[in-house]
Length: 110
Image (tube, rainbow, N blue to C red):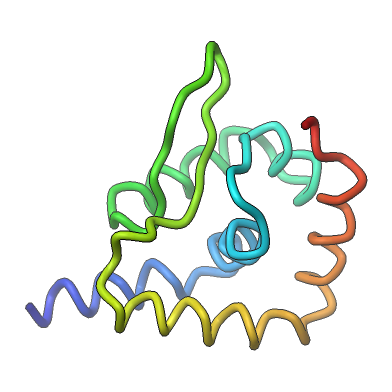
């Protein structure tokens, strides 16, 4: 159990993953292309971090045609969802995370 707890916090501690989580926590389903536009990072880097988040079961992925949509795994235990809620509240005060959200609103492909 200690390993799972450690893995969850490690997953949530990396800056790029925090930026991805920030967008996912503030939106329903998000496609990779929107994350690339919003975060101004390479698609390969974002995909690598999304895979990490998916393997840690923090996010889920669904397909619609050729598009993959990511969202927060709402089936996480309540304590982990509470941690993500705290992160959301903290990230709202971060300048870069606010800029990411504003850019997401502009570049969202839906």
